[in-house]
Image (cartoon, rainbow, N blue to C red; front, side, top):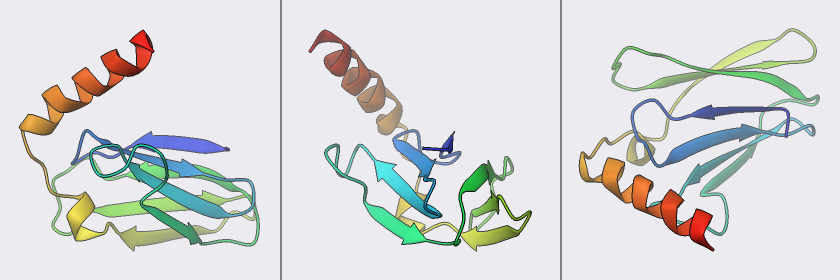
Length: 100
């Protein structure tokens, strides 16, 4: 992996960039054994992931690659829904994984 970012609107989401130009979006609340979305967005490695800090609707995510290109996408709506209970759920999930 070449870059990583937490999802800003949902505490259970992690976005990973791969050296083959693909991204993986993981939502541990939905699936913890595989990514919920894998998408090729560049022909070269992704060097940066940038999530917008303001609560935009829809949420935007920018990706930069080794060629200097920047691409901006809207986050999938179901991965942008914030639920207060997910904070505690994620804390428990991490604690369980550490104890394994």
